[in-house]
Amino acid sequence: MEKVYFKLIQIKGIGPTLAKEICIKLGISLNSSYSTLSPEKSDGLTSLLGALRSPGKSSTPIEFALTQLNKKKITRLVELNTYRGRRHKQGYPVRGQRTRSNAQSARRLNKTRL
Image 1: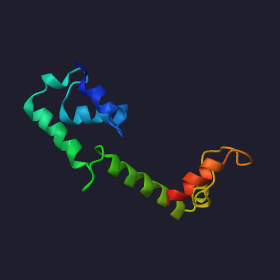
Image 2 (image 1 turned 45 degrees about the vertical axis):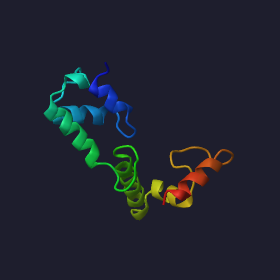
Image 3 (image 1 turned 180 degrees about the vertical axis):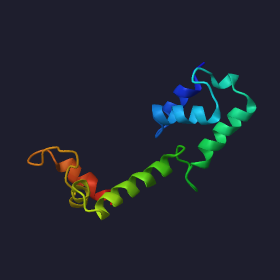
């Protein structure tokens, strides 16, 4: 029997910090398993994760919300004309990688994000 905390971490887009915040918000102990949860807590957990599901798609919970958040962050950087925003806009590596020989994948990926 796996614990609820570790099951939340296995969901795409939920890391340890967010899983801990969800457990604390719902009043679930980090060491409790799913079978020992009360019906109210299990319903709260499913409603919280279901509310973040993308409309009309059968994707994993909160995946759509997280991609939208990432797009907003990148467009904000571009609008503020920061160094990282300019790198995203030009399609170059953003985090200091070299561009002389290894930037081909970054040039492909960064242009599709905007």
